[in-house]
Each structure stands twice: as C-alpha cells, then as structure tokens.
Amino acid sequence: MAPTSQAPSIATYPTAILLSVFALLISLLIIPPMLWHARNRNIGATSLIAWILILNIQIVVNALIWRNDNTDSWFSGAGLCDIEVKIQVASGVGFPSSAACVLRALAGVMDTERTSLGKTRAQKKRGYAIDLLWCVGFPALQMLFHYIVQPSRYYVWGISGCVPSVSNSWVTDLLIIAPPVAWVLVCAVYAVLILIRLHRYRRNFSTLLANSNTNTSRFLRLFVLCIFWLLISLPLHAFILYTQAYIPHEPYSWSALHSAENWSKVEMTPSGGTARYIVYIWLGSGVAVFMFFGWGRDAAKMYRQGLVALGLGYFFPGLRDPRVGSGRQHSMANTLSSVTSKAKLVFQRRRNHCRTRVLDFRVFVDWLEVRFDKQL
Image 1 (cartoon, one colour):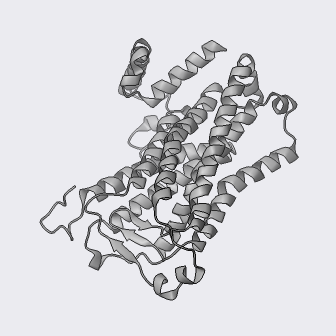
Image 2 (cartoon, rainbow, N blue to C red):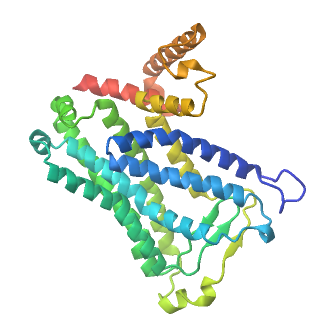
Image 3 (cartoon, helix red, strand yellow):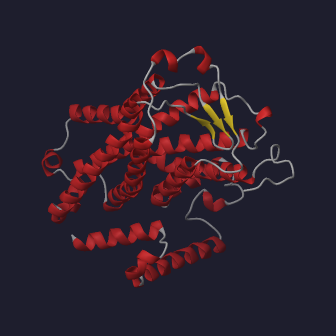
C-alpha cells in the first residue's frame, strides 16, 4: 500500500493506522470474555485470550511508533523491544500450551471415572498448578531458551515493530522451533481423545457436563475454537519445519552469538507499507475469540457494564437496566431478534451448501449446539 503523500519515507502509512485501530478494537472486545473465564477459574481459556490481548496491544503500540519508513527518526526500541521480543517468543509456546490446557480440561469433563467421583481440594490445587505450569511456566522457560540462541538484541521493522532475532543453528531448532510443534501435537492428541469420548459417552453427555458445572454451549465453543486454531496451526508449523530444513545451518558458538559487537547492533528495516504475516495471525486470533465468546449473555452484560462505567448510561438509560428502555429500544431488540431468527432459518435451509459460503460463527455454533443436542 502506497503512502498518502509524495514523501514515502516520512508519510504515515494507512496500513499502520488501520492496524492500530483494528487491533485496539479487538483488544477492547476480548477483555470481557477473558474476565469472565478468569472469574470462573478457567486458567487455560483465560491465558489463551490474555496472550492474544497482549499481542494485539503490541500491534497498536508498534504501528503507531513505527508508522512510516523514515528510519532516521525512528525510536530505537530500547527497553520496549527488549520486553516485546521476549513476550513474542513466549507466546509461541503460550498459544499452544494454553490451548492444550483447555483441551485437557474438556477431556477431563468427559472422563467418566473422575467426573463421577468428583475432585478433592488437593486434586483441584494440583490441577491449578498444572494449568499455571503449562500456561505460564513453559512460556517463561521459552524466554530463557531464546537468550541462548539470540545473536543480537532485536530487529525493528516498519509498522510491525519489534522482531526477535535467532541464530540458524541446531540449538535453535531444538529450543525454539521444536517446543511449539510439540505442544501442537499435544493439542491434537487431546482433540482426538475428546472426539473418542464424545462418541463413547454421547448418551451421558448432559450428565457429565452437569457434574462439571458447565453446559453444552460453553463446552462446544471452547472445543470448536481450539479445533479452529489447531487446523491453522498444524499446516503452519509443518511449513515452518519444511522451510527450516532447507535453511543453511551454522555451528553454534556462545561467544560468537553473545559478543558485545553483535549486541550493540539494532537492524532497522523499512516496511514499504506492509506488515509481517504474524501480525494478521494475532488479529485473526482476536476476531475468533470475539466471534465465539463475545455474543454470550455474560459477555454482553460485561460490555454493558463497561459502557455504563464510561458514562454512557446517562445518555442511554437502557444500559443501566436492560429491562427498562424506550419503545425504540424495545423495537430495536425485537428487530435484532427477528434478524437473528431469520439468519438461523436461512442457515438451516442452506446448510448443505455451507462449504461454499462464508458462515457467521455465532450462527454456526448455535446450529452445532442444536444438532449436537438432538444426537444425545
């Protein structure tokens, strides 16, 4: 995308503005689902959304700071990038480990032996400890691994901002490339296990959910979100492994990698008005979270409370109490309800053609929940 003026090195790229606005909007929208899962002590889902939130905040900050290609006036990134690159490296494990934590919990719901017996206080504490180890401990360990293979302080790209630097050595393959792949495989194993248990215990599904203080909608939304992420992650990591195999590797040397000369360099790369592909993956992850969890009653309640806290309840009294409002508000609610019902009917009539159409996530999950209940 071309800059908006005749001075390409100085002008602000429209891509930078659009990315920062869009990422800020996504960040605000996924906070209520994250808080809701945190209140219910769902560590896996909370951590998964938190990683996405942090990375989208980075998009906002970086796109505003490095919004053009005038490298002479760029901020060096000192301090900020030192923190950001470690978070980005940790998120490479934090994403799949948090998803594995969610799938592990869902598989536990379908475990008839443990569900029937219930969990003791010691078992719950041990479960929380395992969740924190997976969602926080292993990503933190990845930060230490990154320092071992970090040849320079960091890179700075236009619009995308701070980028981690790693060496092309077998140690990088072992410490940086392999752990995310291993966690993705763990997710795949848990997903298959859940499918097997769903088929085996489909008659007792409702009872199992009731014993675990969850419901069909919550279970399916978490499961489908993880499957959606898994279907993207598997080919992506396969491609990374494929390309890594053909990259020339160099011998590993601690002294060469951590020399004072290398650590004093910060490479700055103009963007030409485009962002790195990973930025769009972070954005897409945030959109997926909102589409799956931003439409629930609990999330809607938190959105309303947030608007009231901002003072909008004074201008829109219906926000304070959804049962009280003007005729227009009731009419609007009826209209939205009618539109939603019609959308569901259209989806049911055309479900045989769903492969060739872009489907609304909310309608899809609602339809899946109804179809799933009919099979029980």
